[in-house]
Length: 489
Image (cartoon, rainbow, N blue to C red; front, side):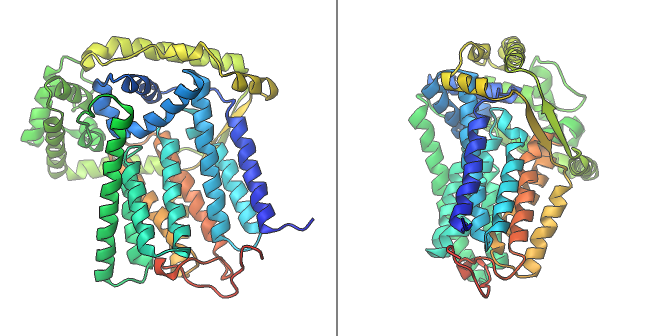
């Protein structure tokens, strides 16, 4: 039987479907954040919006996504596993589509797509109820639009669609704004536009993004029977610099934050300023917006007072990102029952912690998440009886970032076909790296997305190495290649 592109696509999608089903059997791993999102889903749906709303209200679409599965399959950890597997399956399909759209022929896109899907399946982000899986999915949707729509419509409509996607995606994670900026800059760098025309198209894109952002705010009222509270943003942007460096003498706003932290009645975490007590005090005094503005002013005062020290922190954390983790494959051979019990104990410990600190955070509402380990989804429980309990997680080195960026540069210098999605991904990876490095510092799970996307850049670049790659609308800076092979080739 002769292999055709259609048959190759079906084979890769079959691999994605198989891995999606297998992932349904996984037992979720719980962090404090994932427990917070699980609790927020039920509480928000009931109209109970307390301190959690001020912290995660801007990520409410992520919370709503998981809550849909809790409502469909019942409140259980199995429902979380199903939600994560569905997001994985959609992401794997988008990766497959990108590879076959960018690459000509049969075997190269097949091998690259299958390789990326296998690596994706081993990515730890699919093991816990976090915002990362949904952010990666939205980023790939934006890249898909960037790659596919110009073949059938005007680039202006494509960039407007991306603006809506990124604006709406703010309700999942604010990093979608970085992707929006990356796409707009890509239009300038490889789109062959004059500056006036680029400014005009960028204005359209901003309007579209604003509409998407407004839509995600409206979405809150569709599933939460309570007003959306004011939320913190600057507090997260300056969290790490404050935690490591901020002292009262840095400026009046920093001194004001220091006084708020000292009067919050909570344990001080370092000799510098920890922002969680400050945020709780802002909620207690019904002054979240004012407190967030104060944090923003304090952050800029800190940058002006200690630029060298903040830069040293940035370089230290960035170096850690680039050197850790090491390449490795970690296996877990515990039985399904042992994993379930470990999950139960972890949730019990998190519940005790939430109960203990609830009063410190304005009597933040909570419920015992240990209860999600009391029931199973029957079809998932049956699936576990058919599958071995072992699993694996791949650690991707941080240095893959540099490899990916160099690949993107090569794609542009050689004026390869389909350079737009490669350049946009590269710009996003750099932007996400810098923002995460500055605001949160090193934490391996914060960088899983941009490390995988660095591999996507490498894969797409390899597919466009020869001039026979499929091309898109030249308006997006995608160079027409000779001897273009069609879908039926």
